[in-house]
Image 1 (cartoon, rainbow, N blue to C red):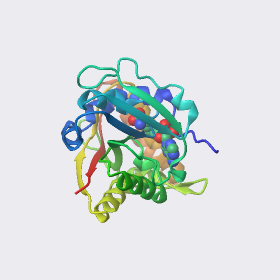
Image 2 (cartoon, helix red, strand yellow; image 1 turned 45 degrees about the vertical axis):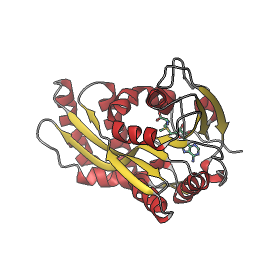
Image 3 (cartoon, rainbow, N blue to C red; image 1 turned 90 degrees about the vertical axis):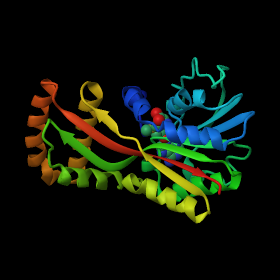
Length: 270
Ligand SMILES: C[S@@+](CC[C@H](N)C(=O)[O-])C[C@H]1O[C@@H](n2cnc3c(N)ncnc32)[C@H](O)[C@@H]1O
């Protein structure tokens, strides 16, 4: 099997605080109401180091069994569920499954109470998204997919910067084709929502923005955002350099702000 490596534990650790602050409590509570009490089996896709169970387990009933899927065996070796407990305080159990979503079988979630994912949908393909939805529908398991990038970015310090050209280049980079895989990027939530709706499921979404004002994540995210935009459209280098100089000065003065929009999606059988 080919394995993939789309992320590193350091990046996941750096974004963990902003992720936790952004996640939708409303949709998590709605998921908790949608599942039966009693033993709960949650399949988490693109589990990484386990951010989803670390945040969600305490909001769901127990006893809980998590099945953590990822295509990257390396990232799963950094899985950390120490101290993770259900809402009654009992520790959760977990298994891992290494496998790519491109090969996800329709019965992958057999016996699941719920299916989750976090910071995943924007890097999957249309075909992988269709497989995920088909497997959820086959299992009849509600799905909570958190923190999907929407492409909306606001950078200010305090006046708002016009970043439309860089933003459009970044969005195109998110939709690029790598090794024959064309990622959904900012189209992910609408594609997945449409697939669930076509299956007759109810879909709710919630805006879950990162609000960045200082510190490592703002700097690292901004570097990555500019770098991806320039990889897509190198001719924007002058524009980027002008912005970068201003942003570095504002960041040093503690005055730079960014709002990076994400969306959470909850889908439930009608
Ligand atoms: C950005 S990380 C998110 C990790 C974790 N859910 C979190 O919120 O911190 C995305 C994860 O999805 C996995 N992944 C991405 N595309 C995948 C695919 N097509 N098949 C299987 N796993 C995939 C990556 O290996 C990575 O661990």
